[in-house]
Amino acid sequence: MDLRKFNVAFLCLAFLLSIKASAQQRIHETFLDAQNKNKYPAEVITALSGDWMFNDALVTNVKSNDIRPKSPRLLGPTSINKSNGYISTEFDIKGLSSVKVGFIGYKDDVSDYYAVEVFVSKDNGKNWASLGVRRGDPTKEEEAFAEYKINNKKKEAYRVKIVNASAPKSNRLSRINITEIQFEYGE
Image (cartoon, rainbow, N blue to C red):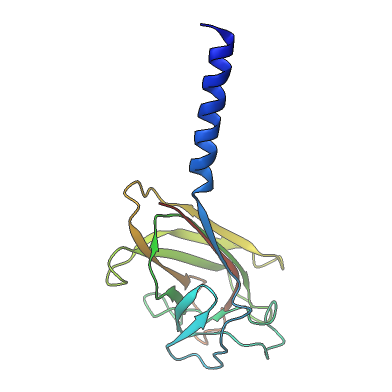
């Protein structure tokens, strides 16, 4: 094979791959610009990325113990099989290929472990499938990340739910802060 033809073919292939890679888009949500929600009962709030359901969760800029202003706080479970605080998208993400969630244990809460579980739904939140649970280290005051790839060859639309999966405590003081959420998607 002629080396020049090989180089041209290689450059064409590299160009096509770069076009495909650039088709990926990202949503990066920190909730810094979200509307305030100062109480835990279920309510839809509006953020830059869209509407989110906050259930046993809040987002406010007046709590000094949060890791940073407006980092959503999710209540922990009171026992196994009891409801956990969560936030979920009220919008679908077409072609969702990855989810990344930054989280940390609430400063004043001591727990055996703190964790998040990430779910996705293809039917507007009627049924949810778990992508997995990621625990953080309660002995360290550092952010942990839950990262998941989604095999979405059909480019289906998904909703995402992030649940506080920390160790149960009877007083629900196993709260967590969500520091950031990133979704990658493309068609």
